Length: 389
Image (cartoon, rainbow, N blue to C red; front, top):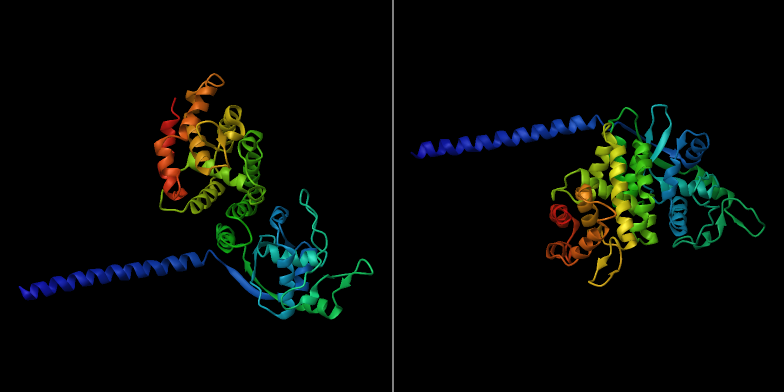
C-alpha cells in the first residue's frame, strides 16, 4: 500500500512536470513567432543629418500629428539643455515604409522642437503657426534665456556658432521598424511607447494610430465628432477638446453599441482593441454605423440639447458632463430608437431621461466610488431595458 502511494505521488508529480514543460515550450515558441513580426535596426545619427533628411522629404512627420505638438517652451528649452550637456535622450522610433521613407512613430515632440528651433518646422493647414523658438533659461543653463538659432533683429541673442555646430553634430539613437515587420508592428510600438506618457492622451494615441494605419478611418471618426447634433449635446472644457475627448466619446458609442465589453479589460484597453478591430476589418459597415450615430444624436439634440448628459436634480438639469449619463442615454436610445415615433414621443424620451437620474439601479452603479470597469457591464443591460418604450 505504501509503495502504491509513492507511485501515485510520483505519477502526479511527473504529470505536473510535463505540463510545466509544455507551457515553457509554448512560451518559447510564442516568443520566436512574434519576434519575426518586429524587424528593427538601431543606430545613432547626428541631428544635422536628421534635419537634412526631413528637408529632403526622406523623413516625414504626418501633418496631422503636428496638431499634437504641444510641448511648452520650458520642455523645449530643457531638450536643448540636455543636448548641450550630453544628457541622454530617449531613442527616436521611425517606421520605414516600402518606398524607403521614414515616418516618425515616437519622437514627435523632440524632432519638432529641433525643427522649430532651427526654423525648419513646416506650416500645416489649420494648425497655428509656431513661430521661432526663443529659449528659456534652464536649471543648469540659465544663460540660455532669450537665445535663438539665428538673429532676425539686432537685439536678438543668437546661439554661439560653436554651440550650433555642437548641436548639429550631436547624435540621437534611432530605432527603425522595417517595412517587412508584421502588419501590427507600427500600431503596437506606437501604442506601447506613448500610452500613459506625457506625449498624448489615450485618444490622441488612437488618433495617431488611425492616421498611420488607415487615415480614412480617422477621417470618419473626426466627421462624427464634428457632427452638429453631437457637438450640441456635449458640454466639455477646452482641455478635454484639446485632448480629443469628443473622438473618444464617438468611439465609446460605437464600441458599446456594436461590441461586447467584459470586466476582463480596462475600458481604455477595450477601446484600443476596438480601434484595432475596426482598422483591420475590411467589412466594417461605416455607412450604417454613421446613420445610427446621426439618428441617435439628432434625436437627443432635438429633445434635450446640451442638457442631455447632465444630472437632473428633480427640478432642472445642471452641472457638468457625465460619462455615465452619456452611456446610459445614448446606448439605451440606440437599442430602442425604432420603437419611438419622433417628434410625437419627444416628451416620453425627455421624461425617461429625467427619471433615469432618480432610478435606484442607475444611482447604485454610477454613484461615488463607481468606475467604468464595474459600471458599464451593469449599466448597458439596464439602460437597454429602461429605454424600452
